[in-house]
Length: 277
Image 1 (tube, helix red, strand yellow):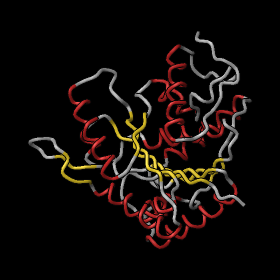
Image 2 (spheres, helix red, strand yellow; image 1 turned 135 degrees about the vertical axis):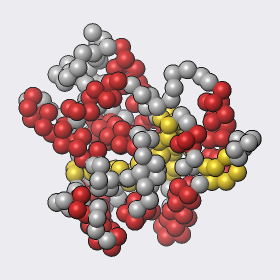
Image 3 (tube, one colour; image 1 turned 60 degrees about the vertical axis):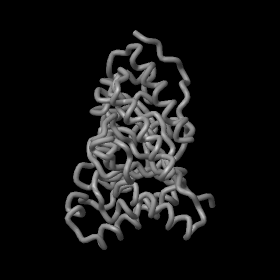
C-alpha cells in the first residue's frame, strides 16, 4: 500500500499564520479529491480543530455539502493532554498518526508556536515542512539571526536547527529528503526598503540551510470572514456563498492556487466559474 504524504505546518512563533495555511492547504487538497487527515497538535489553541467543527455545523445548518477531512483528535480532552507528560502526549500522537496515515492520501499536521516533544516528532515524520513567516524581521528571527549593526546574516536560529536535525535523521533512517518551504505570508501591499532587506536575508539563509521560498497568503478580509463558517475561498460556489462576492475573492482563489503550486501539490479546480457580484 502506498504511504500517505505527510505535510507539517510549523515554526516556533505564534501569529505567523500556521493555522490559516493549514486549513487552506487541507481544503484545497480536499477539493482536488484527495483523502486528507488532519492532526491539530496545538492542544491549547486548537484553531484548526475549531475550524473544521465550524465547517461541519455550518454545512449541516444550511443543507450544503463540501468535502470534510478525516479528523483524529489526540484525545477526548486535548486541553488536559497539553498538561500531560511528554511520554503520554507522544504515545497519543503516534497512535493518532498511525490511524491517519492508514486512511488518507495526505496527513496534514498543524503544530503549536512553541517547541514541544510532539511537534519535534511530527517534523521528523514530514515529507514536506511548510513554514509561514510574516513580512518582518521579528518573524525572520525564528529562522536566522542578523547582526544588529549591519543586518548581515550571522547564523541560523533554533527552529532552523530543529528542521535541520529532522532532515538529517530522516535521511539516515529512511534515505529520504524532507522538502522545506518557507512562505512569505501576509506580505504588505507596497514595496519598502525593509522588504528588500528582508528578501536578501531570506534568500541568503535559504542557500545556507536548504529551504525553498514560496508565496503565502496576503492579509485579506475574506480569509477572516470565512473562518467562523469553517469555509475557505476553495469552497465558494453558486451554492456556498455565506458572504457577498467581490473581485477580491477571485484574487484570493488565484493566491491559493499559487500557494499550492509552490508547495508542489495538486490544488482545487474552479468547476463552475464564480462571477463577481
